[in-house]
Image 1 (cartoon, rainbow, N blue to C red):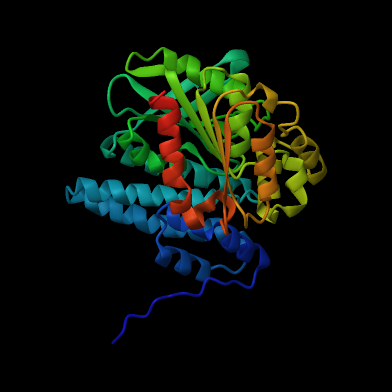
Image 2 (tube, rainbow, N blue to C red):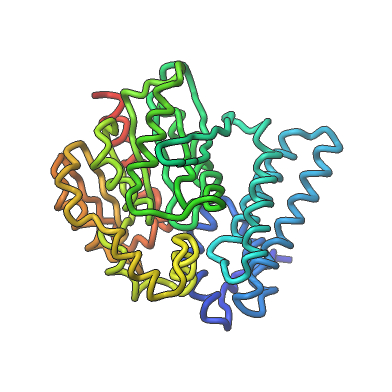
Amino acid sequence: MPMRIERDLTHSDPVVQEVLDTWLPRFLRSGIALGDITATVGRLGDWNDWGREWTATAAEHERLASEAEADGRTQSATTAWEDAAKCHHLAYFLSVRDPVLHEAGLTKMLECHARARPTMQPAVEKVEITGANGLRMVALLSVPAPGSPVLIVLPGLDSTKETRHFARARWMAAGFAVMSLDGPGQGEARRWSTARPDYEVAITAAIDWLEGRDDLDASRIGLHGASLGGYYAPRAAAFEPRVKATIANCGPFDWSECWDLLPTVTKEAFIHYTGAADADEGLEIGRRFSLDGVLQHLDRPLLVAHGSADPFIPWQQGQRIASEAAGPTEFLLVEDGNHGINNLAYRWAPYARDWMIRNVIET
């Protein structure tokens, strides 16, 4: 008998459907099993069930992890704890209507990732970074060899250091140490901070910290940001001359210009992560997330990648980032690419990696 494959990923709730339409390729690329997605979505009555049902899916991976640990199957346990952390991230991913459930999702994601971390390969170290005026951040760091150059990877609005560090192996194989950063208002750091437009304060503090490590080459630093991180990265590089090269993936030139196109849950998340009182204040804060008058200071290499089918940060936003930067810049437009270009990663990610190697390691 032929195997039956679940393919129905439609939902009657327009908010759930908008989330699936926007982020399904991202879920799959990050390693969420298709079966977990179809089963979890199938249990949803509406968007308000999202966090609870992904928590239930994560619990199954936790059960498998505990069983593997009890049997002494260390690597299987590590993988299962990582899978549980990914599902708990989805439980709180953009789901901010219930603050108790939101915090529980973050807590469980951190707990499961911590259970996996001691036996992860490549190895991962968790570090705390402090900066001026009480700035406090948390990062994950993986170092392939002494003296490695460093790629700092930035989450966007809703991703975290844990989800962004998932791709470390490919960069480490190229010779980079990888630091994935929870900056102001991001992931774990949201517990004590809010998102802010002047992200250069975060990168300055991170590089100061890196210069104190004797196993890293802090004179060779690249920066990589996606989505709102695609705003943070060129913004930070413009004011932090120690960044040698920057990749910006599907970032906005001006967040407020995209406001009316944003998915419902993205607007809600931005309001939450910036500490705004309502949508009006969220939009007002969003106007500060602009690169207008900034990019003339970015005189080092910049690669801007954008999908032509990005539904809420139009590709013209990326084109404007590229056109206004003062230094050597490339604009890579991926035809039919969605937000983050997760649906067609092979069309840009290998090139971006080669580009970063060329501009940080080989120069």
